[in-house]
Image 1 (spheres, one colour):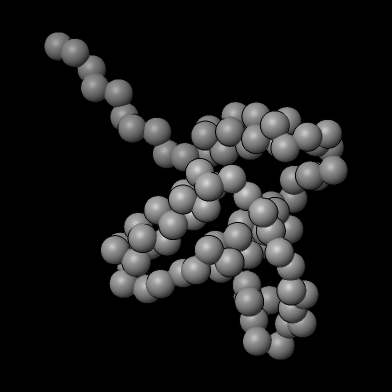
Image 2: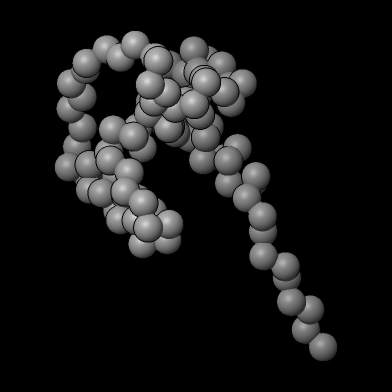
Amino acid sequence: MRVGHKTEHHAPICLRMPHRHAGYLDVISARIRMRHHKALSRAQIVRGLLEFMVRSGIDFSQFSSSDAMVRYLVVHLRGKRSKPKKRHSR
């Protein structure tokens, strides 16, 4: 099912987060708007990240803290990105 599909039931929640996290969501939203000419709200971005968690196959219950989760994700997701080719010196 697509993120935010109209037939899904929604639970209203209130989420407190540091200003730097809210600011980063705004930066992501602005970059998406500039690149794709479409607006995504903070809530849509958070829902997308949560949907990623559901579909990723990662057992998020293995983490005892958000810091442990961040450390794991940084190590494992950085390796998934395409790396720039190294230039050989002549």
